[in-house]
Length: 217
Image (tube, rainbow, N blue to C red; front, side, top):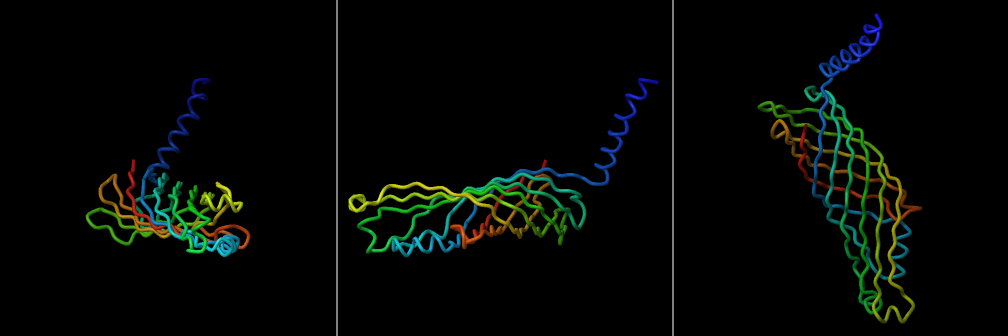
């Protein structure tokens, strides 16, 4: 009797898990992408641009990785979650002729970690290869990097070589197209918008436009 009482919970758990797997298939994936990013600067940076007579970079190339899960992949509507990490390379500011004697370079770059809740809507299924529109919303943590390098004349006039970093939370919106190529490989084209408080912080928004490959386990 003791043996049966110990074995019964295990049987029940296994039965529930098997039943869940049968009714709600679960797909796990990892992926990588290349991206083009545009940034809209907030008021504090626009004030600095006027002071230094420069235009901070508004575009950055980047790379990203992702991992996630997708429920019920054989239905017209599916839901899932995606974790993203994006690294946006440094880009140089445009320095005016008047500021060139004092400033050698100003570079800015970003990185972001985010988690989104995704809605997959199948609109085609040719040769058993799904085509999905994906709409997602989530939260992200965005980190800004910057480096100011003065010229010799700039040093003489009180400018110093400066590195700075700042981060903040963002609301993330996503629209994507997901195309199944094989049982394990998908192509993904996505636009993600990171919305931030540009009145208090340096950034109003970042738009990430990416193309990538996803591997489904």
